[in-house]
Length: 117
Image 1 (spheres, rainbow, N blue to C red):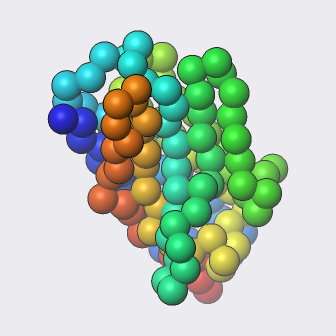
Image 2 (cartoon, rainbow, N blue to C red):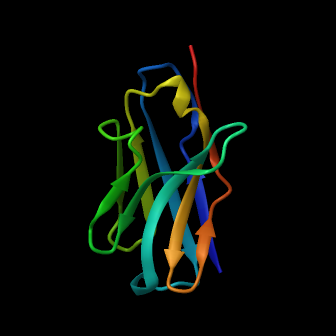
């Protein structure tokens, strides 16, 4: 069983910054982690990919966040972070942490990010 706990969400003004964190714990070995990442779901919309980071060091970003968001992780695959700069109202959503293992796809419960003046 894997637990993912997000933190760092909140209310921020347009143009501001936030840093999201996700702590991973439970019964898994880092060698079995395929990738970790962040997804988000805005009200009335489907969940969408924000950014992921893979074992080979590759990163993937949604076009809408390229140049503004940066994903990073620790070497033990116990934490993943999302630095969000130049936030826009359309970034408002619940942000979910995701960990893909060789046999399972795990999700956190999410943290709310609200971008509003």
